[in-house]
Every structure is written in structure tokens, then in C-alpha cells.
Image 1 (cartoon, rainbow over the protein chains, first blue to last red):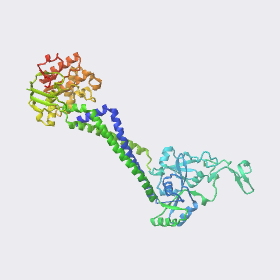
Image 2 (spheres, rainbow over the protein chains, first blue to last red):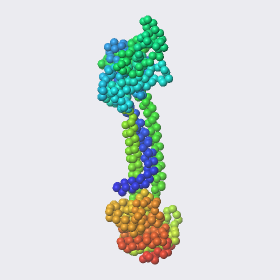
Image 3 (cartoon, chains in turn brown, purple):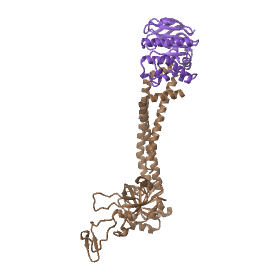
Image 4 (cartoon, helix red, strand yellow):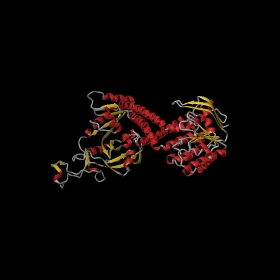
Amino acid sequence: MGSLFFLAGQSLRHRRGQTAVLVFGLAVPIYLVLAVNGLVLRYQDSLVRRAEATPLVAGGPGSRFDLVLHALYFRGRVPHPLKMADLAAMRETGYALPIPLHVRHTARRFPVVGTTLDYFAFRRLEVAVGGQLLQLGDCVLGAAAAAELRLGPGGRLPTDPDNLFDLAGSYPVKLLVRGVLSSAGTPDDRAVFVDLKTAWLLDGLCHGHADVTGTNTEAALLLARTATNVTAGAAVPEDTEVTPGNIASFHLHGDPADLPVSAVLPVAPDARSATLLRGRYQAPESTVQILAARGVVEELLGLVLRIKRFFDANALLVAVSTGLFLILVVLLSLRLRRAEMETLFRIGCARGFTVRLVGLELGLVASMALLVAGAGIAITFALAPAW
Amino acid sequence: MMISVENLVFHHPRSTFTLRVPSLRVGKGERVALTGPSGAGKTTLLNLIAGVLLADQGVIRVGGVEPARLGQAGRRAFRVRTLGLVFQDFQLLEYLGVGENILLPCRINPALKPGPAARERARELARRTGIEHRWEHRPARLSQGEQQRVALCRALVARPPCVLADEPTGSLDLATKTRVVDLLLEECAQTGASLLMVTHDPALPARFDRTISLGEGG
């Protein structure tokens, strides 16, 4: 057996180029099939786990997929946000604790999630470094976001502008990092959490600026002035950072009941309360939809799995063509190596020895391909986000 | 008697050629040159003696063993144990260095191991044929003469009692040819091995104990 390994090893080493091509040719389909399946299973598992941890999701009318993806994974925007009044009505039913979510902005491409401290308790998110949200303009970073942004408590994180060409739009705000959460292995790891009021500040619904009620205010900054009222124009420079010096100047405009939230997580104490709550919003004229997240995610996965079946069929074709390619390579190799096989036979090797030699070479090539594919899969899994 | 051939008839399966050898004997330790025109069947005869081909009629015995009566495995074991073969076209393994090509019979023979003794023996043969400095080189980097010397060393490394050489000096220059034949004769004399060597060189048979000439058709 030792001689067989020695000869096979020497032969493969001598034909380095061919061996490398064979290893690569085998490793790629193995990698593709296993990596795709592995990643699909992994994401499927994390999607289902997240959905199981969030029984109900509420939002405005529109696509149920969009709403669940938005509320659970902070992906995309929902077209119809709810109002704080809807949240209050939900609370008044007494069937659930409604946790608001307002996700419309990003900071260095990480979603900025406006919520209340109830969210952290509901998700069992703990602060690993620093502290919790204290005041307007504070943020708490998910573990992965903090690591990628290289930010910790005391750091400043500017939000991304909505639209560079919209001068009247909301301005980026420098958030103060108060703390970093422990890793949870969920989308929370890649989020920037702020207070709801801070989320509205990013929307431009809340802002701070210098006092314009004084008589020394430049007239160009004002649209109108009466004895009892001052109307400031867009020329008044807004504060882009909340500091101890200017925090008192921040204020909300409009009716607090009309302020938006993009989704709500109604946390019902038991299944009965959850059912009753859903019943309340079943009416066709209801402007609030309450969804069972698990059902929507499973429906979504059903669509994904149909696409995956197509990939599986492709993988089968790739496997068959790779197999045929290998058979061809082996046959050509045997033809090219006929003289070598004949020599081995003449000096005393059994025909079986030469067959075993070629078989062992193929086995070694397959093993190397598996190793390469395994390394590729390990790297892919290490680099791919956990959810 | 090391080799005895009686009433041999062999029809080549892919041609009309028929080899007939009424009688051929090579004694123990005897060194015999086998001559004859091209196509006379010299290489075929060596393959029949080695048990690579099987005769249609007649009896071949080597060291008292009749290879035709052995099974595949038996003939293979017989070749490993009894014969040292030198081929017309060297037949070296392109992926092994000179040293490993010489040691190849030791790798495939369960009774022999490519241990220090075999390695020393291989080095000694390489030294005597002037190819020791090429020990690590692959056959592709050797001249034809050097390749033939490697093939010769490979045939002799296991000290076989019988050496069958198929025109081993055909592609060598005069000096190398002399060196190779010297080594072959000397080695066979030292180990008491019988030698049956095919040659076309008219100057060589004189150095052998005896010459057997194979006519057209055997």
C-alpha cells in the first residue's frame, strides 16, 4: 500500500498542472452545491428562528412580505406607516404590549432602528459595553455594526443623507454612541438603535435651532412675525448634533398622535390574547394589519425553496457533467499512460495494481478537491453574515 | 539449466507472423547473445520466456518453472522473483527520478523493500554506469544512453537469477555501449545470473559465452 501511495503521489506531483486543473474542476461543483445548500439551510433556520421569536407583527396595509421583512430584519421600507395613535389604540385593547419600530434611515449603511427600551427587553438584548439610550441623539450599536464601524461608547456616528440633492430634506445627524450590545446572532447585531424621538429627528419631524423669537433675529430667516407668533423659514440653520448646550432647543412639530412608526411588534402575554388582538383587526376596513410572522416567513421560504429546487436540478446536471468529464479524463489518462501501465505489468505488477494506482490517484484528487471545497465553504460561512 | 525452450510455436494474434523455436537452452550463469534479422521474433521470444506472452505450443522452462502453467498472479510473482528485464525502449516511469526508477522492482516486490541496502545497491549500480550524478533527475532530462543505463540498473537491482535484455545498447554511443555491456556481463558473472541478450551489433556476440541466431520466422 505504501508503494501505491508513493507512486500515486509522485505521479500527481509530476503532473502538477493537470492535477491542479482536476482538483479545481472537481472542487468548484462540490463547493457550489454544498455552499448554496448550506447557506440556504442556515438562512432558513435563522429566518424561522427570528419569526418564532416574534409571534406578531403589525403595520399599515400593503405587502405582508415587506412588512415582516421590515419588522424582523429591518430590510426595505413599508409604504404605509402607522401612527402613534394606532399604537395607543392597540395598547388600549389590553391584549398586547405594542413595541414601536421606526426604520427609515441608515447610518453608514446600517439600519437605524427607532424604538423604545421595551424592544431590548423583548429581544433580550444586553449592553456589553457602555450604557443604554439616555437622551435624544443617543444610539446603541449592535455587536457586528460596532465591530465593522470600529465604534464604541463616546464615538460619533453620522446618519446617511436621504437625498444629496434635496436641500430642504432632512439633514444627517451625528449620533452619540452610548453603548454596544452583546452579539445575539440576529439582525439586531447589524442595527443602530435609537430612541423613537431620535428617529423622528432623522425624519425632520423634530429639530433644534437657535432661538428666532428674539427681536434681533435676521428678517431673512423669518417667513412671518406677528405680536404673538414667529414663523421661521428654511434658511434657519438646524443643529446636526445634539449637545448638552442645544438639547433644550429640540422640539417636535405637529400632533404627537400623528407621528409615524413603520411597524409595531405586539407582544401578547398568551395565545388567547394574541388571537383576540388579531380578531380586532380582521375587519376589511381596518388600516392596521396584524400578521403571524411564522406563517409569512414559511410562505416566503416556500417561494425560496421552489427556486432552490431549480438550483438543485442544476446541481444535479453539474454533477453529471462533472462525472462524465472525469470519466473522459480517466480514459484519456489511461490511454496516455498505457506504456507506463505495460512497464509496471512486465516488471511484475498485477493489472489490478495499475488499476488501483489510477484509482488511488483519482481518490487523492477527489480528497484534495473535497479539502479545497471544504476550505472554501468554511471561508464562505465565516464571511457570510449569520442571518 | 536456467532457460529451456522446446518445440515452441507462437502465432502472433495481430499478424501472420509465426515464431518457431525447436530448441533453445541457456545454462545457469551462461551469457548468451541472441541475434537475428529484424522481425525474426527476438523480442517476442523474450516476452514468451518472461511469461508476458503465452506460447501456442511447446514448453518453456525458466529456473525449472514453467510460466505457462502458472496463473496470472503466479507469472507475476515469477517475473518479480526470477527475471531482470531490460526493454528496447527503456520504459522508465516519467514521474520518478533516476534513483526511484532503479528501485522500482523493490517497491513492487513484497519480498524486497527499498531500504538502505537496496538503496546502496542502486547507488552502486548508478555509480558504475556513470549516472549517479543524475540520481534525482527525471527521465525527460536524460539522454537516451542515460535512460538505457537507468533501465539496466533497474533490471539488476534485485539481483535476479536470470536477465533478459532486449537490445539494451541499440541507442548508445560506442563508449557508453562498452560500459553498459561491461556492467551487464560483470554483474551477471558476479551474481551467477544467466543472461540472454538480443543484439544487432556484430561486435558484441564475441564477448558472450555463446550466440544463438534466430532466422526468419524463428
